[in-house]
Length: 139
Image (cartoon, rainbow, N blue to C red; front, side, top):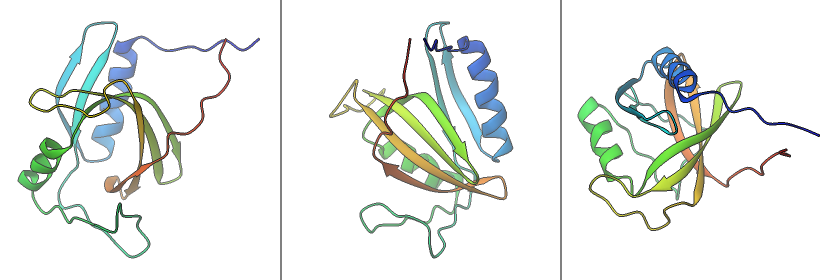
């Protein structure tokens, strides 16, 4: 029998802030009620797209300034709560549970979504939505 362990939100929060800081990003907004952790992190500027980087729908955006990055974040259709992160080399796959945002209405609240972040030289360079990976066995 396999048992799963989910660390307390305070531990996840500390690890998340360490990872975000190590990537040169900022995390201006965090809400932690002990049961759920909600955090928003911004890419550092500039974010660079190079040949071989994955793009979504054939569209790549170059975000030059912190204002560009903040606007991109505000225009995302859903808010999301990270429920898992898997790191392999320079790629981190995050799985989110989607939710309505402060000033936006999500078309699939409660559904899961996933994205792969490519990290180079400690900075998030690309973000690509991917299918949600299958979950492993649980107790």
